[in-house]
Length: 172
Image 1 (cartoon, rainbow, N blue to C red):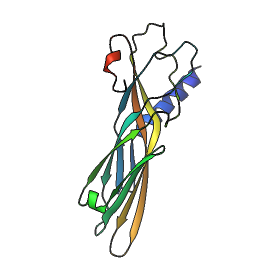
Image 2 (spheres, helix red, strand yellow):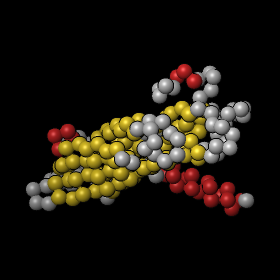
Image 3 (cartoon, one colour):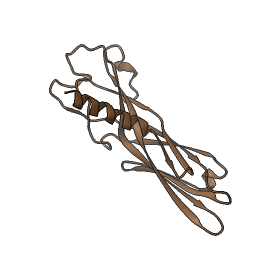
Image 4 (cartoon, helix red, strand yellow):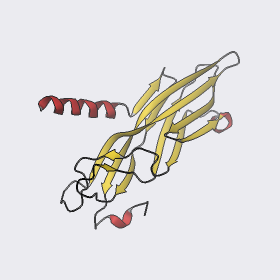
């Protein structure tokens, strides 16, 4: 039993540690914490399907001397956004906001969180990595081009919709 607890803690630590990713010091990627409400689940229901989510990814760009960022592409599941050279000219930081439609991320298992008919003081649950964002950066100079890739885990804070907070859900 202790071994399972230690492995679970190690897995959680590794997920948290991956919320910042780097690629050769040229590309550094951060994921902002998303948040959503879920309705209480029926007892025995193992998984929860997520509603649509708004995801934020920040990319710090530092192309080599003499090179400029030509493009950046950010992808999560089947959703992506691309910034071309005119959109990121002279930018050190690129903020990408993606709207993921419902069902684009696989259902999650939230253990005993937010079960209908069960009273619990836990109204929030942080999931450190429900999916990952992939970021691709193309740097180009007069003589060469280089592509850099980074991937970062996307944290999600689940809120259990109770009678007190049910009206404040952005998805309703």
